[in-house]
Image (tube, rainbow, N blue to C red; front, side, top):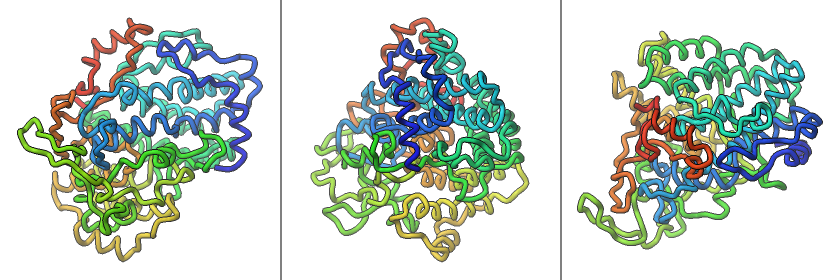
Length: 499
């Protein structure tokens, strides 16, 4: 991130409270002060708020998501994801951080742009960013405040309704289509845009790429709409290379918000280890030694079985699970990926190519599934050096060997679709919100649930995160309506697109 962001943040911090009340009463902002701050300044902070700090990236992205889908494994009891323990404040951390910051920020930006009569590129970029913020929230919890959220000052709404996820998705797709259409050839954002530096061509491509992601998310719930929107997104023009990575640039300070939230976690928590499941999928894959390094008690890269603890226990299936006496035997994240100055990824070109491969397998587009798959694998391997300069670049020869060997796409369904989705899971390592969402949609990779006797889900992998506990009291009627519509507020209730 350019140093100018620090200037923007000094203004933006003065406007935004770090406190959050579950009833949304703190969403008011000072109308007089807000009008004196340019949209670009607010946009810089909102993008960084969306990238997130140590709090939510530790608790939700890593402690829950990354071990639920078995990228990581740990022995620590507070790493709740792969043993299916309940820690309410961890499960609600994205909600607790995003509604008072990113949500309030983006709603304020759009309101100001409307007041200023700006219906061009800046408005289009803000609407795309708004969709990304809400799509992550709804994919985490299901039905969430959307149409009335973040409008305590703007409209006086202090207890927003929870919109049905289906309605949220339909509106987000409409928003993306309209947003892309209103983006012109240039913008005034410049360095305030920590994703694309104000490049409107890349914003339009990201808007369409996100449209493709959301379309494919609906394949179980509404295949006809999924197909229509996927074809529209692809026809509109998606990301075309690794030059279009949607990733937030970070620096190692001076303010905490400038830092990569995952990097801040790596600074204070060394519990996470390569999952044995992930290691098995990376066998014969040149990414294994790029993403991971041997533990300090070993000279080779070895993955830890999920569900492990420091003590031996008997699982609910009657099988004894050996205790891990030395976690340092198992591989840790490569140091080059652990920096506070590395980018935080939102969406990549590789993901887009894998989604196009799936669309081709479904017969929705006429291009070659294998061609899209090969492009996706190549991009996923090549982007690592771009995102993490301290890694060793994967060579063309290594990629060719992989694609002609263990990574060669199967010829027929469903094996080819499974391979595409397994590669998507690999490519979304450290983009754990997306990895978790796509696993719930597709069921790939095939994961074996663990059997810890203290599981709160009957040893089922969680399907969502619960709502904050205070919602039932401070926004009771709207909370109750959401639960009645979606199902019980627990970890195993499936949201609309997962049913």
